[in-house]
Amino acid sequence: MLLPDLRRQVCALHAELPKNRLVAWTSGNISGRDPETGLIVIKPSGLLFDDLTPERMVVVDSDGLIVEGALKASSDTASHCYIYRHMPQVNGIVHTHSRYATAFAVLGRPIPCVTTAMADEFGGPIPCGGFALIGGEDIGRVVVETLTGSRSPSCLLQNHGVFAVGKDAQAAVKAAVMTEDNAAIVWTALQMGAPLPLSAADIDSLYNRYQNVYGQ
Image (cartoon, rainbow, N blue to C red; front, side, top):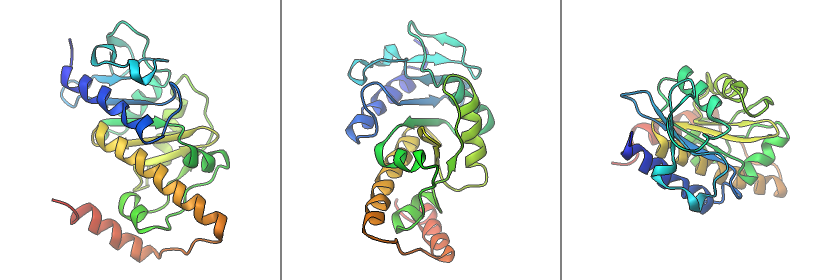
């Protein structure tokens, strides 16, 4: 079996999506790219999260062609592959339809950076890209265009949901979790009034501290 460790990691991380209320039923997916071979492990299409196993993960090449796997790959595979081909620093991708973040997406609105936690993780607003249909590379193209020039590891797609990226699949999952957490905070604040803005200088300072000093 190809890439057993990456298969196990990607499979286990899928449990974090329903655990963090980022998905409903079979929606959403995670992929991870092996830096050495360039091969990608991705969720099979339409399977319940409880039915996922490492053996059921699908391995594809950078063009989305199945290299190993008995099941069809995710319907978002072509877009994942497009992102990997155009963002070489990315080795993990997550797609969700999480509720609060998607509420911003259906309005075509970015999530403003109004919390210190958001400044830490995203270094600014979470941008919203345009609309694209599912099934080909169009979504991937919008994700790459939207994240280019942004410090954010995630973006919204109009009328659709969230795409998050990272140095590996775990980092991408973290970005997806934090996207929804901050979206919920901002949405709640908007029901109460106008959120107080953070200055650009404070956002830069918070982002630098978190990215370069915080943690072990």
